[in-house]
Length: 269
Image (cartoon, rainbow, N blue to C red; front, side, top):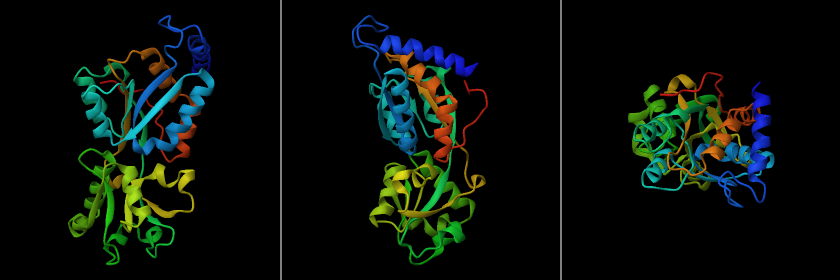
């Protein structure tokens, strides 16, 4: 039934995205959707957006950053149609403030956290896990900023879970988002980093490093939510992209990048 519904939706979207016709009657209206997205989604969402455009003719313009910073931009009037957060709290806050459609709030996946080192590092992260953080050779540990990045908060929680946070907190170097935390490790400015699992298993990172997947019980679940922005003028196109996010095709992409895709009913609060 879902496949049939998506097929009918694609036919409609192909019609409104074709030259000379749009939902508003303007020749070129409705041919793109602007999305603010958490940095951990870079690889997966870029691939999904390309597939969506191929099927519908609608371009998805993606802007990546920390969830908190993007939410702040939306609060300040940034012209986004959709917001993909690395948690549920920021989208819910926007909905509660009337800046996002509460009925569109949806948990699209659950993220994973990894401890990552460069490929030539002598650190045995694969076997020692977070215990490797006690190694005196580690001078800097990269994390995303816990003040605006859910993955940063998860990293802090994971270190506290194994009672290492107090021991290593003075060695933390903070990136604006999870991608910048990974860049600190790549550039040698940190010897190890807490990064998104999606980042370290992406094709672009193959051969660049080694990682240990942090057990899910070590930190609160990284439930990731999306929401349609209230002031969007392209809500039909945004809703269509959300439906594509829920499709089996998108689920396969998310799974490939280490996300856990929930089969539960969308959360609407």
